[in-house]
Amino acid sequence: MASSSPPSHPVLRHVAMLPFMAKGHAMPLLHLAHVLLRRGLATAITFLATPRDAPFICAGAPTGASVVELPFPSSATGPQSMDELPSAASVTGLLDVVSTAAALRPAFAAALAGMDPRPDLLVHDGFLSWPKDAADELGVPRLVSMGMSAFATWVPMAVMVQKPHARVGGSPSEPFELDGLPGLRLTKADLNPPFDEPEPAGPHWEFILECSGAMGTSRGTILNSFHELESLYIDSWNRAMPIKMWPVGPLCLAGEPDRTLEADIAGWLESRLAMNRPVLYVAFGSQAELSRAQVEEIAAGLDRSGLDFIWVVRSRWLDHEDDQFENRFGDRGKVVRSFINQLGVLGHKAIKGFFSHCGWNSVMESISMGVPILAYPMAAEQKLNSKFVVDVLQVGIRVWPSETEDGGAGHGSELLVSSEDVSTLSRELILGEGGKRAAARMTELAASARAAVEEGGSSFESLELMVREVCEIGCADEKE
Image 1: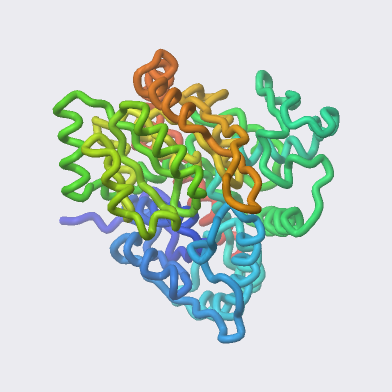
Image 2: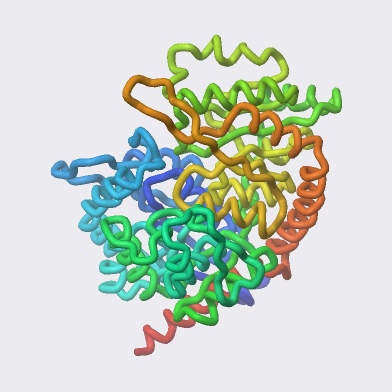
């Protein structure tokens, strides 16, 4: 006879999730939804998404999760998704999407109020501050997903408090240190704007302050990482801040996502493995837009390296020359222009290195699969992620841009990673002693990552404690 006793762990009756309008921000929440339902920590989950983003959410959501569309009012202008921007590296573009998203406030408030049963938790992206008002009015506890590492969250905060970079003047390369973070030497070049300025100001800074204010009144922040990887920064945050940071990752492992590869890609990788030819995986995220000059430098460098590689290329410059570009490398290089299952690629035994922009999702997937990184940060907090990967964890090699003439009329010059550096450092990562040391360290971290999400692991326990705390808060509020 089946037991009807209640579960020994806390259970959330209904969780609402509101991602930001970017695939990289939505993916951790999709993974979180999978693990909450699979472990029985939530009974029901509802995603709220715009009509443009809803198909991606529906495709990745777990069976049983619901998706409610939030339509923009006809009066809304501006980009409705990061996918609409010509370059995600533009802070102005990001702020435009954030501003447009604010038009969803009435639809979101109505959808949240109309949910049955009433959610006992709202998880929303940290780039969206306005969900706070509707949730507070309904008495729905909130957790915030920042989509960043603890390192890239804590370090800028410590920099803003201590202002050590005020002592180096305008020098981008003069090192400074932070109290409480022994051995870490930073430069202004390691910091993304506006944190590279001791007294930041302007729309970007105002946006950060607004987001920080909304996060500060939440029940905590969800961290897609694990304690063993970032204990110093997690513990520093939890000692200093009124809201708790909950490390529950790597969510790409905890959610047990599909790692199936398309037959063409799987067959090519298998052929490399059979020939004992190590493969470099090259991908710079779903938002990066490389210039034509940079695409050419990377292509020439990969060609010169003599390595086998699989390259996910996203560039508007190649729209009219696909065949020529894709065929220039012969069988040694495979060019992919469509979506690829990145975790599946990184988990293949033929892959021995990852040439990456160091977005946090990519870093966590690389660590989870034990693949060392050639770091080429481009935007947002990626420079800090690269610093963490290369200097702190010592699981990668940094490739630096050098000033190179663009050659375009009126465009002057731009900072490019040279083909020579791409060739030399790719070979060092795959074949050199530095790469071998990084790979050995990465193997250790991959084992720690798997242990963290397994039963009894640090992230496994942290997720249950997070849910328990939210449930207890809900019970206390009901009694009041």
